[in-house]
Length: 90
Image (cartoon, rainbow, N blue to C red):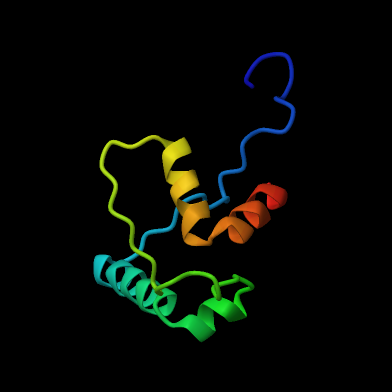
């Protein structure tokens, strides 16, 4: 930038890509998000279909399994409609 000409569209230094957050605040946010996912009316208000899911929140323990097997397990448990919704949104 010192010789010849200026750079086209230089990086803006006033952009804040990351913002610091207190550890306790972050932990509280994660805990409240998990608590909200356990409340069925809140999840249904977000647009998820949970009538076919046997138990809510749905916790699946898998270690070392593939994504394909995990998706087939979710379809068997009744979460196939939400998976289709996610595929269409991307």
